[in-house]
Length: 374
Image (cartoon, rainbow, N blue to C red):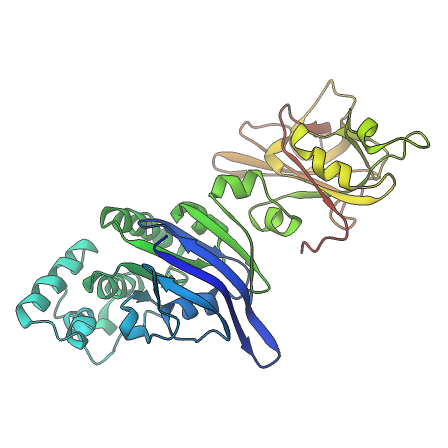
């Protein structure tokens, strides 16, 4: 690991912003800290950068303890949410700032600034005033300034949040390509799940100052370890369920031969094999929640596990069409009664009565109902 954070904790009065954080980054890896506002991700980044000092725990970089080092001594590249450009300096001087503070020779500064601006497609902008640049161009200047010092570690605190959607999509593709080309290790902070998926080799989902799960985007999406991670990584239908009581004295082992849960309307769905452990942790009669992503549901004509309902809305979303189906007598996500389905093909229109159920091979995720998840 090029970076190792072990048990890092940061308190602000009675508030624990970062709580015993453990994190490791491999050389050349692009990792994202993902979570809602206030989860501690920016504070974690500032601890790694050296702008905050942990109350407990250690930070090691390239096998050296840097916990007490200043940001300047650590030498990491940093791109802030508001870019933190100097308005009284032109583009060249903004990009050269870190090199000048390191007392690099003038010829080296000129060479590195030009190379950094070429990498972000801003060569020829050296004499421009930063106030005259667009938001996207300012973001590139900030990135060029971070790259000019050739950092071993690049830290990025929601640097794309001020850009419009089209520019964000284009810029993050360019950012990942650039970081990979230069073989830089990068740690990125965002609250945007799509952004995290697009950029990252691995994603660490944070809540209440802790990492709840870390893995590849696909691992987190398909195999969440808790309800919060499942819900934060994409759209889900949340069905309150219970384990059927079955026969008196029935053991968990005998129940496990066919793991079924009962929806609020009495219909029973069989769980996939990878949910056996979660199923056996729920005692008969105990409540749970079944999380099912929209693409894991389908319109079914011949299934005894199907729910009856009416299509209330159909929305085109490019590669997918999203359907809102109202199911009578079913509790969904707090009582809405509406189930969301995603399909690659154009299906029934609003007002059509349909039957829906899990598609073959669907991923169904069972969690205790008392587990925090919202």
